[in-house]
Length: 128
Image 1 (cartoon, rainbow, N blue to C red):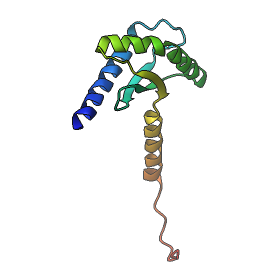
Image 2 (cartoon, helix red, strand yellow; image 1 turned 90 degrees about the vertical axis):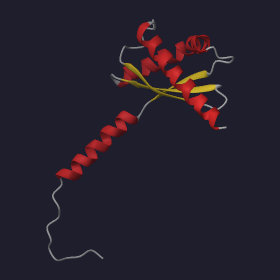
Image 3 (cartoon, rainbow, N blue to C red; image 1 turned 30 degrees about the vertical axis):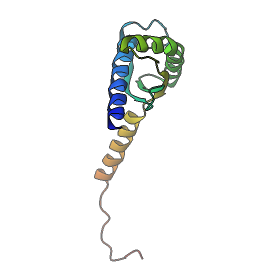
């Protein structure tokens, strides 16, 4: 069983590389901007479904348009990935926004606020 997980991880990484290459070099849909980064891929154990996490820079409108463009090329990418990786059954591809960058920025902001906060002055009152 452990080999199945490793195979899924290897296939996920290969899918990430293939999709990133296609999006960077061959994507013709004008809605897909050049500011798309494929940050990760999760595949199911049976390799039938792949969640592709992408980070998209730009305004909310540009991001929404980019995800529409990604959804429209998903079928093409599915067949391309299947051929490139010689998979018997190519996984169904779903694009999802990667929230890790926003989360990291939020954590950094909170940590900066904590560091800059002055410790409360001791006034002898204790909260019970």
